[in-house]
Length: 155
Image 1 (cartoon, helix red, strand yellow):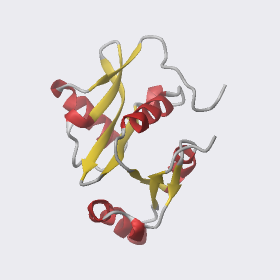
Image 2: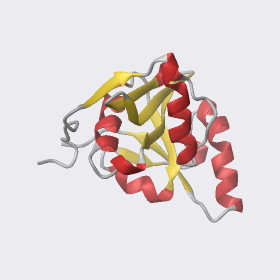
Image 3: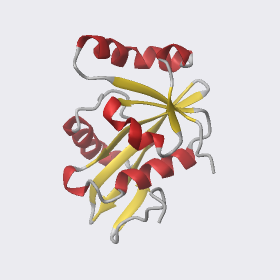
Image 4: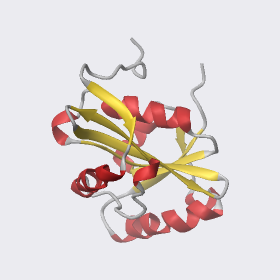
């Protein structure tokens, strides 16, 4: 089986977020120590199991581009293919050039989907401003961030 052809686990449901999901989404994002701003429930897709959100991610829209962001899987649900399923779904939903910023350790995960690392300087202006904080943090902290652009999967 292809590493990207993953099915949802039995009982899990992929759905658009609802207004009442925002607190569960915030809890997942903060628990993963991800950047907690711009968490607009309307942009999120969630994976739910028995009424509880176990994974989430969003497509943020900017002028002429989109960002895949806030992708989180609850610790007890990791390594079950949920991040792969959700990432693939968000890529399919994207309607504009797609970018992301991630910790450098996640580069191999996103590379499998057709994302490639690009220099921060080559980002479109709306994302250059948004991702500037990660670039500063990379210079000041022991954490490294990568900027990636979706270029598709070559067959």
